[in-house]
Image 1 (tube, rainbow, N blue to C red):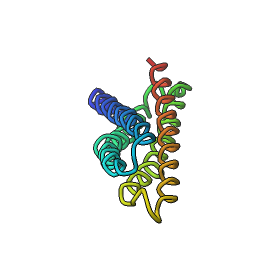
Image 2 (image 1 turned 45 degrees about the vertical axis):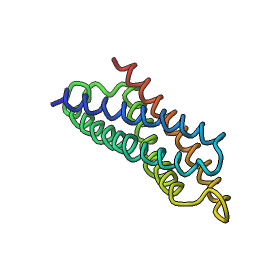
Image 3 (image 1 turned 30 degrees about the horizontal axis):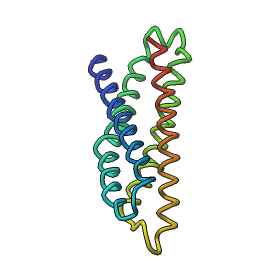
Length: 152
């Protein structure tokens, strides 16, 4: 069962990070795009978040918790968990919380409002929030990935 959990964990990480890097490239392209092209790019960004990032985050968190629960009662729990594992778990959980509570709602709301007109200031603020939270979540996910590699 552990191998299945590990496979699902790695698959979730690939979905999350792949979707995040794709969203990053779309976000960079949005900076130089004309205002009339933004709705199409926002639909692409929303689909990336719904189809890749959200399932990836959920899969990583659930399988990570299941893998952690399997460690209790083993020799690892008696000897103490390695620091790299604690860094991986902590950074991964904080990254997931940021992605689920800040980034995904901001991107979803961006797709529902007009980038021009009376909502232009709100659009700019949400765009900044989505960019900063996505970068922070991605950085923490990379830290978790590096810590996970250090375990092997």
